[in-house]
Length: 334
Image (tube, rainbow, N blue to C red; front, side, top):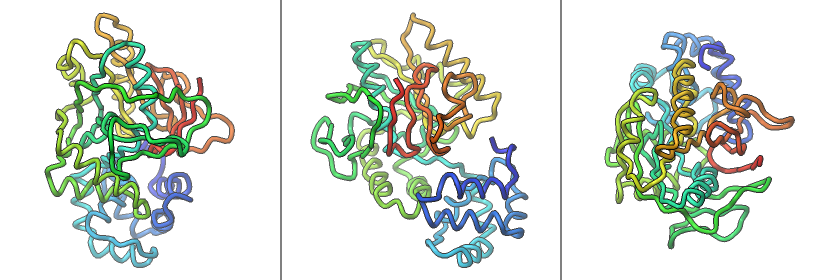
């Protein structure tokens, strides 16, 4: 994904497709960078995978960049470039958007009902593991009543608009095991890790920031098992740690774009093999951008009129929905 666009084109596309109408600050910043030879030269001195817009924007916010017009932002980048460069080289984009649970929940609940067992949730690219708690959050679909297992604060209610006919559950599935795997797991008890997670929330998205803080408190009360490892190598060992009486669901959101194509293909092959092996039921939910997951039906194309920023939700390699990147919308296809 990284190598297919020059740096200027990457930032221009990010502004047009990802941020326009969604974050005016990031729109003007990325548009400005795409036309700025000096900053493009600084970025091109970094490894290709470290030039990504979200990484630079997160690093700038992490080091205190306010939401200013582009000229002031440009001055901030130039004044702080050595710090920003070090952060970009040592950190990665690990946005941990708990709101994505809203688009995963219908599929999770359907799996639990079909299997008649509690869920063992295993998240690939888990960051701090905040998407491992769908049974601890509340969900409001289309301004309907809040679905939750008990009283939850407003910040933990995930709002989601729907189209099509999603199988919205009447109750939340039971989760008996939650674990995640990541090359660099983030810890909710570590102040720097929490500050990095907050820096990855886009400036205008106050509700997302409030939600992140509330979800962090949930994880602090009941920390998940987070394992440092590679999704193409270490996942199977983690699956073996799940309780025998639970149905394993391996899921991921906005992760595979940061994996080399050979790694994505190896992971796809592993997951298709695991889901076909009925000696231990394993389900696979992928929620990724268009073109990210090769060889999965429905994951490489979009319908007429659909915007590029929508994700594809697939169950065991079959596309079932189009989703908003932060869990804000769900269009069911079945």
